Length: 350
Length: 118
Image 1 (cartoon, each protein chain N blue to C red):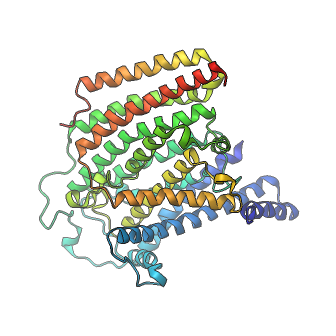
Image 2: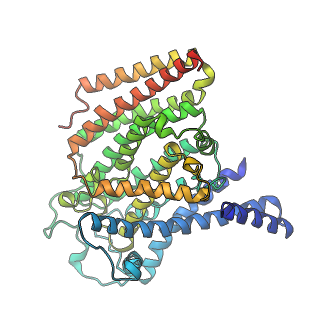
Image 3: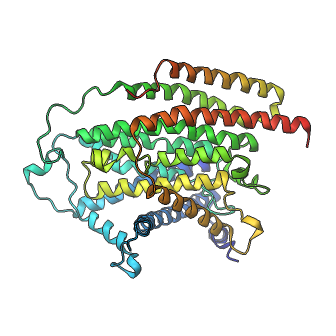
């Protein structure tokens, strides 16, 4: 039911273009443009909805109601906020490094958007099916460190500087466990292609084969998107808003929307690597594959929000010690155990 | 294949358009009122003292250095992980040696106090 809506649209578009006598290369280009626009629209809507969802989840956890005035059930609250921020003045303080200061909020959406290029939203629905998909996503996602640092350094503000330093230290430290934890899954599948990794989970999801890797990935993921308990980067009560302190209007809005975009990337990767991607659990194929993917991603995002509004912030020394002394050794041990386990498994020849 | 990386390039441009479009739209319609105090660096209502672009805490630098070393090693682990199943015992022994070297490196950094936040 509805399984082939999106792949059908793509196939139909190709047929129409071929019928109109468009050369294959140009028709591929047009189809790619349509995919790009679809992803941009989908991601923008989701990001706006996620801001609203965060406020609602937070409100209910704290026994409040949350936004409920603008639109039905407050659904248009974020839209109103974005429109308001759009009409606010972009203040460029006197002593900032102007080029870098303005480039940072423009570039901030690039890493999540590039990562979305290889995410399979359903069966056969990856905009680009790269054979090194996992590696590509990790490489692109790590670029956001530089962009936050650009914002923090160029602002010429002491809070921004501390925030920028923390961004680099934190994201760099937690990138290691993040990258190492995915190695276990890659050893099991022997491929870096996202589509093949999902297909390899038809039997069991890798959360059951690699539970430790899932936990490490999840914790490091929370840290990578700078959310509580790892939100030292913007810790409001100590450094105002970290690297975003000097940004006003749309510059600030871009940072905030990009944060939710990165959260979606981390959740999507978690779903793909450990939760079986678009595969239906228990063979419940009455829902289409893209819908299952959507449900799983949103379940992950909900857990992210739940954690954010449940735990207090940790100190910077605790953060570093936990990353380097707990997560990195654990993820190395996970690789080792996976390797030994696979070798014994094969030697016995079950 | 060419078209895959053209697609990646398109998504790069798309990401730039999302950010640039927002900022540009805002730039075209936002109000401009000159008011001197507004352009000072934010610092809880007092003037900022001394330069901001200074040499900062060295702990951050140590972590960055450690990261560079470990990240390069991680890149070597990826191709190994992909071929792990088809290489057999050789890859298995290699893995033990390589991870042992990594652990010795981490242990050394730990012993020397590079992981302590001072």
